Length: 285
Image (cartoon, rainbow, N blue to C red; front, side, top):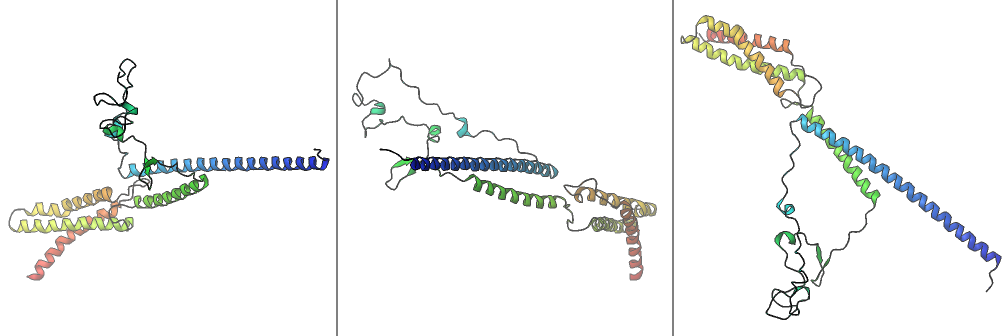
């Protein structure tokens, strides 16, 4: 059978086209692999940065990394298969015969104590391969999971990383708010704290006045507490409250505590409470 020159040329063109298609497919596959590797490296760097940020947030709010727990009882029991019997200890009777001993792998089915496999211990039974139950009820090995598309998995991982970034930003915003009056401004919070401490000191002023009326406290002690003692206690109490509950978990530097304003509020409210008490007593008389 003779082949013409035109048939040789057509065959050569077909082979050349197939080679070019194969080279193009290989170049496309190599470019796809490079893109996948670049995406994986980017996600790895992003997840590492998220891990470091979460560690910083945990340390800021006082949560340390949990220590590794003790190994579970299931993992601590190693799988030790039964040692094979030596040649010298092989039974002299043929399998399936004798006085009812263990017949091994070739034992007759249906006999008590005989089977194709030795009886597994409790720890070894958990290491058995998973099986899928067929409609007929027979145990068959589980089928291998279908191959997944790396591009789809990377897209899902990227979306999860975006969601983690969003929750991380919300956590940072919450960590930048103090536990005491979180929606208030620092100035309003300081005024409220100092005024509250001064009001508590004003209640103590009334108690000292009543004690002075019955002779438990003399006039000098009452004046010293009203003019200096209780205002100083209220001022330092407000200072400590702002430092303990008015400080955000994550803040650069020390938040303002408005010391002159607190000093003015405390040393004005306490004497004013005493003056208001005197005016009230005189008005009732």
